[in-house]
Every structure is written in structure tokens, then in C-alpha cells.
Image: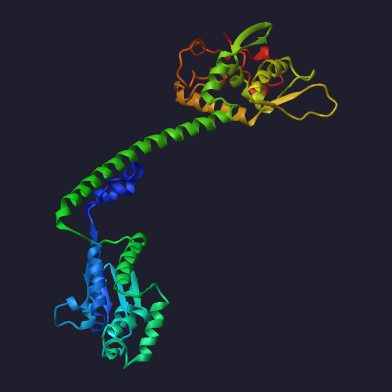
Length: 404
């Protein structure tokens, strides 16, 4: 059913809800109408008319064909297949179902309620009943004579739940329209779709297929983005390990920085990375500026440990109170950094005869892990000066100078 858009504001006409109403196929709801029959024929007709006027499908016992099934089973099946249950209640209890002793009307109502079927009820007011009597309808036909107590209990049950009191047939039609709209807002109904709208259904299926493909594509893109996020998180974590620098960046900085170390009266310039790596056993135990320390240890303190402290690789350790010298030892960051250098060194070293890797004491650290070709990375670092082992920390460095 087309909904006119003339005079409608653009904000409403272009809204998603309006577009869905205007383009989606109309769904018709099946409404099961339950009531006593002889006393409420015109009221049932008013309800049926209202259901049809609102574009839906009425169903009731007067529409059922005779069959071999028990009447109550037929009723339950029709209630199950309907979308909404409606009760019209007057002043009659109705015919009784033999096994239960309850009226069919009450059994229908209770079955719909217990099966959680969306429902509503319209109850005739006293004014409506009096108007029917004045119109010439027999009081015996309108008012319950056989089971007044059962009717009273049933009325109390119905009016304790969702219902509307009506004064005339116009109120019935209005109650039907309002109640169906209210239930449509509160429930997702399957309803019935005309066969002429099958092309629209086919289009929905096609759109669903396209949406599925789009979802798969978006999932792939999301996986790529998630991998990038994880990589960036790893970089952020790595930068936090060495005072805002990654391992690769700090490696190149230390490789580019030069220090001068003196052995046997001869001074030699080496990069700070080689000096640190070659003297890592000294630095791990700690070096001091004490006057009683060897000249070599004092050099390591001032020319290697102090520059490394700038990058957070060395830290001051405790010394006795009252002394005028200091002692530094590798920090946790320094241990981790030189450990990574050692791992990279041994991973890239070429085995010599006998299958042993080159020793640290006679080899320089590997080239930059970033694979750059800067002057610092092309220069072959020298570890001759820093090749003294930790076991000889109190011997003259000149005695441990490698042979040329």
C-alpha cells in the first residue's frame, strides 16, 4: 500500500523509517477474533471490518469448515497460525467445552495468553449493553443465565489484563486500529506478504548476498588493520624500553658515537657500541672512579659507562658513606640491550673451523639491525681495546692487548 508523501517535510520523507515503509512490501497480520456468537454478531462484524480496513486478515470460528478434528484442536491451530489474538467480551459466557467445563471463549483466551501470543480485548460497557436492549435485542440473548459465576470470574480475569472498554461499534473499530498499531510497535511480526511482492523479496535476497560479500571484505581489511595496530603497539612498547628509542635506533646511535681509549700509551678511537659490548663483563660487575681502581677501570667509568648512562644503560650503585668516588653498573635496560646485541651477534656470526662461533673477545658487534648503509654502519668497529676479559679486571690492559 503506497503511503502519500505529499506535504511531508524532507527530514521525515528522507528518514530511514519512512524509506523502509515506502519501499518494503506490506505485511498483513492475521488477527484471530474470539467472542460468543449469537449476542455479539454485529460487534464481531465491526471488529472484522476494522481489521480489514487496516489492511489485515481476520480469522474466527465462523470461518472454519467442518472436519474430523476436535473443535478445540482446530481452534488452537488457528491461534498458533495467527499473529494477534483479539477478544470481544459482552455479558454471555458462551457454550461449554465438554471435557473442561469452561466456555470455548475462555479456553481460547487462556490458550493465547499461555502461549504468549500478542493479544488485546474489548469489553462492552454497561452503556453499550443497555443500548442493545433499547434497540430491541432480547435480554435473555444478551445476559448470561446459566453460568453467571463463571462469567464473573472470566470478566475479572480479562479486565485485569490489557483491554479497552467500548460504548458502541465505532469504539470497537477505533480500539482495533489503536491496539494493532500499538502491538506492531512492541513486536516483530512475520505476517503475510502478497505474491506480487516476490520480486521485492528476491531483491532483498540479492541485497543480502551483496551485504555478505561486503562483510567478508571488511573483515579482511579489519584483519590487516588489526595487524598494523599490533605492530604499532609493539613499536610503542619497544620505544619505551630504551628511553623512547627502539633497539635499532639506540644500536645505530651508539655505533655512531666515538670514544677514545688508551692502552700501553697508545690512544685509539672506537665506537661506543663496540666499547660497551667488548667490556660488558666489566660493566656488568661495575666500574668505579676510585683512586685505587686501575687506570683501565677508570677509563671505562669515564669514557664508556658515563656516556652509556645518558641512554639509561648504566646506573649508579651504592658506595660506602663518606667516600668521594662513584660506582656504576649496567642497568636492567643495559643488560637487556647488550643481551639483544649478543643474541643478534651469535645469530649472524659465521662458524669457523670446528663449528664454533667467533668469540666476543675478538670480534666486533654485528652491523646495524636496521640494515642501513650509513657511514656509521659501514665502518668496521674495532673491539681490540675493549677485548679484555672480566677475569683480568685487575691486570694491566697492556698485557691483554691482542697481537697485531
